[in-house]
Length: 475
Image (cartoon, rainbow, N blue to C red; front, side, top):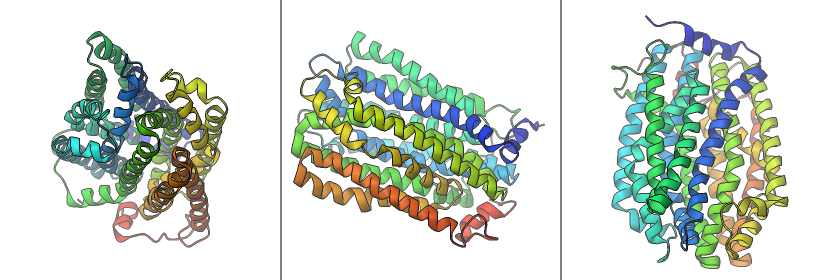
């Protein structure tokens, strides 16, 4: 017989003080997301110091970003959509549906993970060339991506189930699993790269093996029969309504990742045209460092997600509004610190990755330009995730797509032709500025319209109405 231990864990989302809850859920998520960012940085740090070919290896690794973003887009669609839906169903005390969502998360990730992995392996070289690989970097990119794609289904399952851990009341377990991947990867990287002399292939092997170990741990935790929501037979069969709702909610992060894929292609092509392989390597470094602060903010958003989702499902608008406000404040503080470090002291960060006399100053200049508007970026990210957390997918999708396609793409097509490599960096900054203004307008419009949480009803699509306001959804 299932205990009510997990029921008590989820009930606290609607009763405990918001500040206390945000700390409880956001701190583990922030640690986990920071660890996840460090996890990616570790590969680049070791790869950048491979004798004689470190710079070319970094360039090859940077070229793989679009494929990894494309794969992550499908994983995010399932993982974020499922975890958000689980939070909402727990808020409605619909535990049966919440458990079936967890099972469908597993099935969808296995199916999509295998399909994306197989297709990626079939077209790997044409994709890498299209994404900006040159004759000098293609082999390094191929060697790394081939191994990553072989383990693609593991990656999808690990990240999807890790998201579910937070929604089912296990934020500290999710954090522990992510930290474990970083530690294992950091131990295996030098062994495979230098001791076994596998170079960039060694970094890929370390990445996949660390995820396998973490996945085993996550599955073991989610299989605990004492928990109200856990993995067991009978929940893995795909249910049309559940799948539809997962994909509807997860469409926003999917669109964001898909747009990111297109954007990285344009960035790579612009840098290749105006700066060559060294400029691509510089982008890899800049992306790694700036991504660290973004991951911290995303950790805050992940901490906000179950709180906002539960209280939205329980129709407690004041608590939803409070968690949004606190998340925005925290995100702004983080991104302001990022501004100070990356604009005033970038050289101390870049030197961790390379001491190349040509690459280092190029990356430092790129860092300063990209991070000049960092203080307002946190607000933009939290706002988009807030709309996603309460199921308002259209607003979230619009924010994601507009920042990448409507703003950034035109800038990337115009600015590099005027200012060369600097134009690529300036495009990213300009897009962040316009996207933040757009986020402010959408949030203002939300709280001054009939869609406001203070209104007696919220106008949404029929599918989302069923998800949020029916006490029970029968698959």
